[in-house]
Length: 348
Image (cartoon, rainbow, N blue to C red):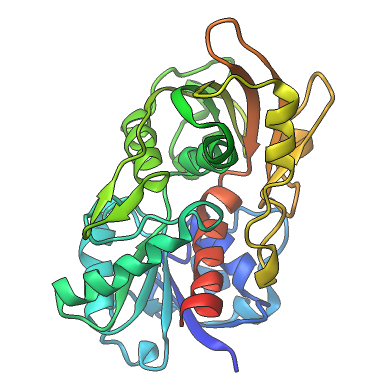
């Protein structure tokens, strides 16, 4: 039997990606779409400005949008809600849904760094799901809040995990070139970004630095222990629609050749045994000297793979490489969906 699920913030860019991933999902039955008061009561096709190149799924077009209220009767039989809410709204609303016994898989930043909330990239740290026992005990609820990190963080930690496990890490430095879709449809004006690079994205560098260390760290004695290395980040917005590109520099604890880095990345496939519907090979290596590129490579693995290229020696660090992620699929909606898939298969 399928599990009934709903989407909060269903009309926005990330909400639309959730709908694409869930409309025909083999494990989940998309039964509720929720959005703001001005959209509630309307057909989905009438209330949303659809930004995706593929049309609205036929089984979603005429669904009636419901209020974002856990007490609304439409949520009575829903077990999982996927949140694409803005962080300020998510802080209140996700809490209410968890209190009402729902499993909340959130793409928002509101609860990511809480001491009893798992921040999950399943290929990297799904063992952090065990924190939910502490969360339920602390907060006296039957539901739960499970978060996925910032889109750029996901790209980085998936590539860093096999390096850390095999060779150890002392230092990491990252420069991002982030697509405009990461700011939402109305987030960056065309006059600001065309013919330009904006070397600032509010809170992005801080998120990457703190979230990465939490995800790559451990959970011991009822608290998170950050990974024991230093990370520096510089974030830039560039005139690309979808696809975050990152230049990543790593100093390893053990001296290692680029070929060895490529091998451990290429062999990294930790969730293969679970046959998750949204899962794709986490890291796909490109060997051309000018790849990866957003326009050519962002849809690799249906947008769920991180594409890595230009793995080479660095005279200051040990190794440097370029990584690319589809930011609204692997870095947003797809991240929450795959978290839910694994949780249901392994932990429920």
